[in-house]
Image (cartoon, rainbow, N blue to C red; front, side, top):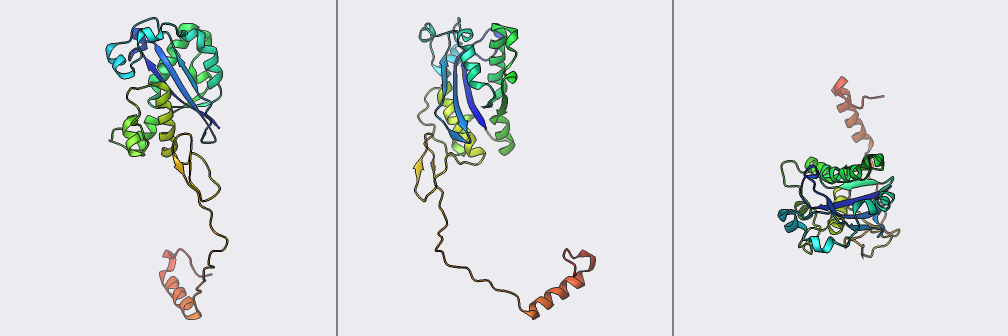
Length: 232
């Protein structure tokens, strides 16, 4: 299965107030392995970021002046995600912005659900850790994923971090090693698999003798209908 871990940065919190996407970052997983086939795009939003949003992502209006607009990058983005399963933390936020951007280009594009399915890792985390903080920083701490290199939020960086968190939430294995040596994956997670030795000592089998079998049968008979294994 092809999965795309996705994150966006925006000029503010609400698309209905005219806020826009300024960055899309995606990393690809195939068979639970990071492929390195990532997608990253900055976008010109034709507006300023709210001060609170700017504090979070640090992406200035000046930096975005020469970047393409969403409509210009749209076809390439849709081709990248088409048919995949999107993995997003707090999916309604990102999907809401993406659907809004699609509608601004043309209603003929439909919505993101037209192109792929979505898994919300925030919903998963709340089921696994009810009543606890489940933002990305809290999950990194809980699942021992390093994020100390993140001073500001960035869509691609957050996607890479979320990919590691998701893999640990759903089993932990990033890659498969067919010997007893350790190896570091692209994500920085060390994974190890040991083979059982073919020369290991054979285990002895101790069987019950006739008296023990008879005593066991007497106990089962005395249980009557309550016995799970009635005598044959």
